[in-house]
Image 1 (cartoon, one colour):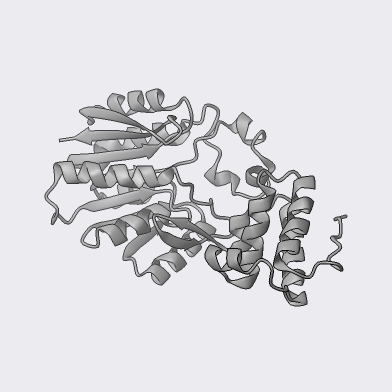
Image 2 (cartoon, rainbow, N blue to C red):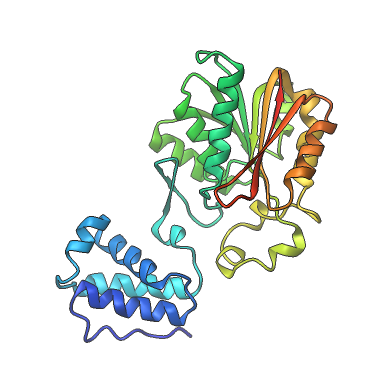
Length: 296
């Protein structure tokens, strides 16, 4: 049973924001005022500047009806990105919907590090073979394909839902990406393919911790994209075991990792026998977030 909001005395955009944010606060939203603003702007199709200079303007009944629906959905902890149908990544809007992990800002660091590592090893014009393992919304593979149009980018995912959304994003954003469906690197190994760059943001949350995540993540985002096995390292083990068969003579391997996992993943990379140098890169919060393996 959900709580009805009373909009009967709401006449302006500012009053709508106050009413919506008050409701969201009761429902445990972390930043109710900002969330209310985002919802109203979504209903109106406005940017922030237009919104801020128009707060005293009247708000239409149909806008309030849309806002009410969004408030009810948010009260059930549905992520705003699923409600709005998109999330920005590397300055581009990516379509997201249930069944696909929502791209996180930290993953932009993974992409930046891949680009930087490649620039340090190969000439700018080199047509590199790149594999992104775990497609999700396509944020990583599509960004790399758009930033480096001469790279041959392949991506693999087990989830047909994720692959479908990523294909949509690639088409809409004009990225040339080859999509394969399968379990981690199996399709590449089966075809005997080797890559210059292997990048992955795999599931890395220990199984027991998945049920402790915020409701917003636990109830709505795909468990397949979150659960990394008993210690969260299952995918990294399998990926690192495959490196000798996968990597060319010069190669970059780049992983996003969870909190307290960087050293273990660095050890797995070194144990593969084909990685000469490992670097660990923190995110903006100082958490060790990206592990890079280099083979020169």
